Length: 216
Image: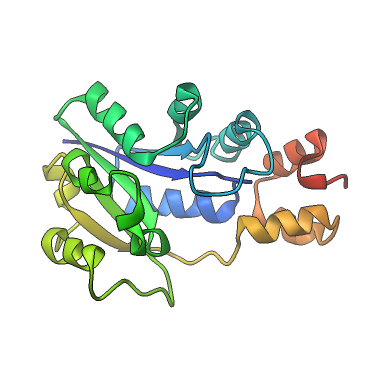
């Protein structure tokens, strides 16, 4: 069964933590495709620091020659970007012979029962949850019940079933965040740290377009 995973985010801006985690995840799970899905209009977060098209352009630059893909479906819908709508649309396009997974971190999964139409996710795809150091999952409530009922013992289920399981994975931690990067960019400082945190092509794009107040 073909395996496709969807890694959503605002990518504001995309950094090496995003890219390296995606590459490692694709390799660890032997995925056929891992698609980064830039969020167009986030329903529960503040407006990103630059436009959707600029964030999409930076994702394309960051993943060049990595084996990863980008999917601009949320930009093309031009409405509030609910993950369930993206998953449902792709399931409709691809049919039932493809394994679809939605990727999230433990911080997001801990509040999964507050997501729009969260009860419909596992009918459409799998959930791949990236475990992060120091973050704990609920021991009671809806999310805890989901884990008890749907957690898979092995990641092989992604290659055997189109949907319906929760798979937990551990990846190499990358101590970098978009929040810290934006603060560094706006402060016009620590260029060496920036070069370690993101692809050169992305930093050049930010400088050229003077995004986040950066004018190095």
